[in-house]
Amino acid sequence: MIFAHAVADVRAAEAALMAQLPEGALMQRAASGLAAVCARVLRGEFGDGLRSGGHRRRRGGPYGARVVLLVGGGDNGGDALWAGARLARRGARVDAVILRHDRVHGTGLAALKDAGGTVVSGDDGPMTTATAAAIRRADLIIDGILGIGGRGGLRPDAAELAEFAASASAHVVAVDLPSGIDVDTGEISGAHVRADTTVTFGTHKVGLFVDPAAAVAGDIELVDIGLGPYLPAPALQVLEFADVARMFPEPDRNADKYRRGVLGLLAGSAQYRGAAVLAAGGAVHGGSGMLRFAGPDAVAADVLRRWPETVVSAEAAEAGRVQAWAVGSGLGEGREHEVAAVLSAGVPVLVDADGLRKLPPQLASPALLTPHAGELARMLDAQRSDVEARRLHYVRQAARRWNATVLLKGSTTLVAEPDGPVRVNPTGSPALATAGSGDVLAGLGGSLLAAGLTTFDAGSVAAFVHGMAGHVAAELSGYPSASDILEALPGVLAELRRPANR
Image (cartoon, rainbow, N blue to C red):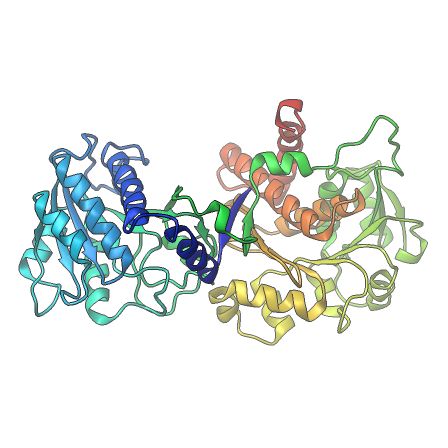
């Protein structure tokens, strides 16, 4: 599992570690790791080595490379200068663009000059003719403008540099974070650097995983500088394949269909019959032992044709005993009494789509809500654009508001509880942005609830597996449908359940 921490916790850990080290040692650790990643970039170990799209490529390493440092006044600027000195000693031509000569890291600048590096900015401002020329011909640009203490967008002089760097052909490496993003929230409120690679120190930072900031961070490289023993519980978690393989329900030798868990599914309508079929498909593959479907006869007939193992009934009250419910996919209007009965049944429930329109002020039983940004905006009386810009803020607000786990679908899917860390799903893909995809996710997540996972784990695992299925389906069909994603599920689950992966 990957962990990310808040700025305050990182700063406290750094202070505790620095108290145990000689002065400057922590910066040297960071600079050494940064220089090593930059050398790998220049050797072509990151994709094409430099930014794609017709830009030139370099595979010769630091020797002979042209490197530009964008240097702010904080420790990130010092890290960039010391890393630049290391690259210069390995044969790179290193030019430094200094935003504030009165606040530059003095020993770092001296080290760069001693190694043969030069300063191309002037006292009157960073953007000079020499600066522009250096950036245009650079192979690598290192962004050391702002550190983790920065807030808001870049100032005009730094914004001009960032814009010019974005237009160049160089690979941009950010020091700890792309300058201009909010590192604790992933929000972007102004001009910022767009990085191809971000080298972060000690622990991951929250904003590197949460959109919109995650979209401008590029590849994330973590450099261990020894903070581990001094860090508290993380603010954010990212599951990895091995975590999901261990968490996925595994029936024991005495299991039967009831012990594996029974899911009740309240979904589908005359207008959205396919939603019930897709949700049922996600459910039958999701780890529980039995599916009880409640819906109109015509919809139930569609479900039975595709999934004959399903037990059907006309209404939720007739479904029989279940360990969890999944409610809402394609449900339409007119079944409010059934939704209310399910929400008060005392078993865990996943609420999706139309079910989200019928929530009580608070949910007494364990609940997993699965809105997309538009649905969450309606639930919280907010603007969709604001939800998309402040995803972490709103998913936490909704989790507290309904005392539930909330899975906010989107470019970076977030799973939040009322208290505790948030999980980010790393397997999201544009392939999942297709009609019916959310219905598959709802059935899968509900099945995991019935199989015994908590709402937090069920949402996290379902999002991970669903994303993997989207990737597999995209490889096979290019632009997959929800049915393609559903068909990819068995292969993904088989891989997860291989003994070597558990």
